[in-house]
Length: 247
Image (cartoon, rainbow, N blue to C red; front, side, top):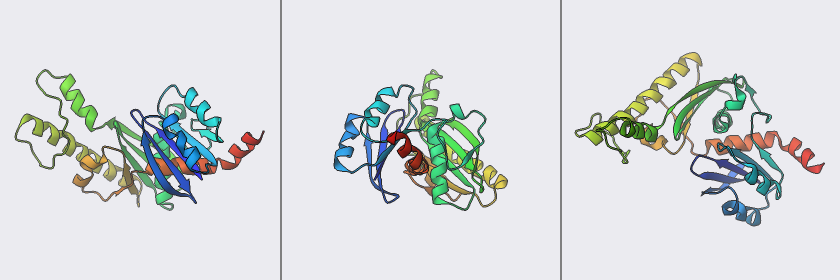
């Protein structure tokens, strides 16, 4: 059994893997005490941690004292070739998502789309070369920006909007953001499909539900995409992790 921990900006998503499949998924606020019961409930053999936060020393120490633990960073060995020019600045969730997409589509070029605070697009070629991608503001950031950088527009909290146009200010803002995201994603997929024939697109992230039903392009949704990718990275480093733990 393996434990995968994905630490985001606002929450933590974890999963227990058994026989290379997800057995149970957890959502918590902490990667430490709130998930510690997992090591008591399951016979965890190894752990992988991915974090977008700057300070992680206490988290690493907490888990390394209990199980062989891999902390994902730019030096971690990957089952793909990373051709990103600044690997140290590459978001760990981005590389994990595209490796998760490779797990779902082992023989095709893949585009991983992660719709969270920001929406990211990451492409992996058929021969397993990670080239890079795009980053743009997510729905919440767009609504917040219109509220903060104008004097008259309100903060919109209801993102559920399915019409082509709005008939009041809040509806017009919702239409602009949600439909705008759909147009952006459709357009991005089209550009990537031109560059990479046979491309398969996969979307994940908490904000994907706001626009995915508006898309014209065929896309597969998998909310555990990052967890799948992190597990593949852990398995790829399993022998090295065991050797380092035995020393």
